[in-house]
Length: 269
Length: 299
Image (cartoon, rainbow over all chains, first blue to last red; front, side, top):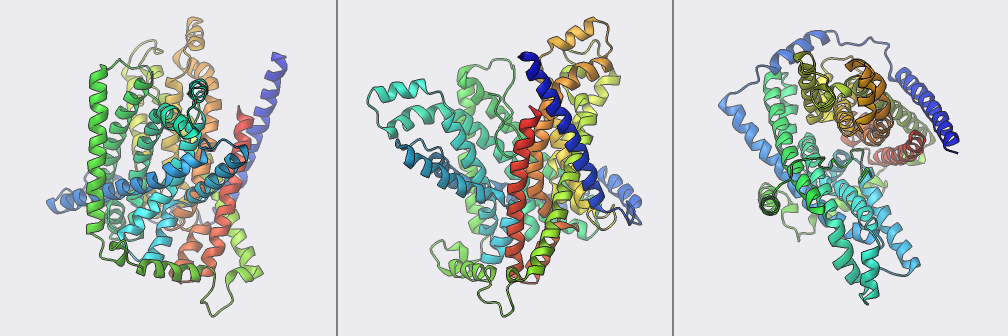
């Protein structure tokens, strides 16, 4: 029995390896190499970019622009995350189907919320950004909404799964004591799922910083915008200054988020 | 908690760490919550303070009218020409671009996977300088720090920024976009791979060591086979993210639906945008389903 299962998995892996290699080979043919690999000055560009990496432009001017656009990027990320929470939390709770008791209503709740969340997160935040800029104009709100929708979609889906995954025994005890489904949720399900939900939200915040940086590509301010402009001026050393600001910002939020997550995980036992 | 959540990246849980006093832990969490809240307030003040558009007034109806105009454009309500989605040749053309986008995403995932596969074991602390290392030597600690630094930098810079840079290096075409996706995702996969190795059950490797295997042999015959299935699973999760991002990379580099989206938006051909978005959603759905099937095959 055990042996057969093992054999089966080996066969599956062999097939998987074949599929992966063939797909990769076919895709490489599709990429198109006719014109050669490197740009005519491509190697020189690599040299210049690498050389500029060790001497970023550190004038007071550039540094103050860097600091200000770091805050802009951070502000977009944070405001976007609040929108994501406003979207993700209610839809996630509905999408967990835990508030209603009848199977029919439950299925309806789940499919409605999950479908909405899937549409939000299917489209990349920068595509949303472009659509919102076209619809609302170059307003910061366009950026915030563009970040909030797909992130809300992801948060909602994860919240729904986490709320469904909590152990059942304590909930049955609550129901046995006569609690309504709403109270079971509020005093049983939510407190049990909360640490993991918090953990995931903080993890998403890290990703939100990177996303906020590229949102500015459509013309909203921020680090991405300045990197874009520097590249248009072919000023690699100024570009690196902003890239270093971005890396530092990501690292700091990364560190904070991992500290929070570790403490939340311990609290859960 | 072995479940992997969400788009590609699992929730990294704190591993075995030194205990932290409860009071300090709660204090830290409370302070973090307070900071997070203050940051949110400050962020909204900044955002609304910089907003010189009608959206600033949350109760004004003008943004609604503008959005309605744009939505009308998408469904071809105001165009004088035939909307793109009534033309068969437009459907075929966009389908071809969708195929190109798919090929780009597979090539990028493959390159990222190969790069990360070659390096991820050298970024694992336990193998390079921790409990699994027979001895410490700069010949092993130096590559560890180099590989980790490489993963950090490639990961922290988003795909789009890589694409902007690589356009200067590679020939015009899909190559800069594919490489940009591969570099960023290679960094993520490498870091995840290293964390897999750091979380592995060490007993098989210790057994291997006790039979006289050298460090390289332990890596190849002990660590790699144990880590590979999980690594492949992560690769599929990342592919789901990559297909969503391939269109974005096309905004700055050539190739696929992304470039077409940029052109259609800048020429105000909004009915073409609708068609592109349709194929984009089809691609995302297709990759999600295929990836789920392949993940099942990997485990």
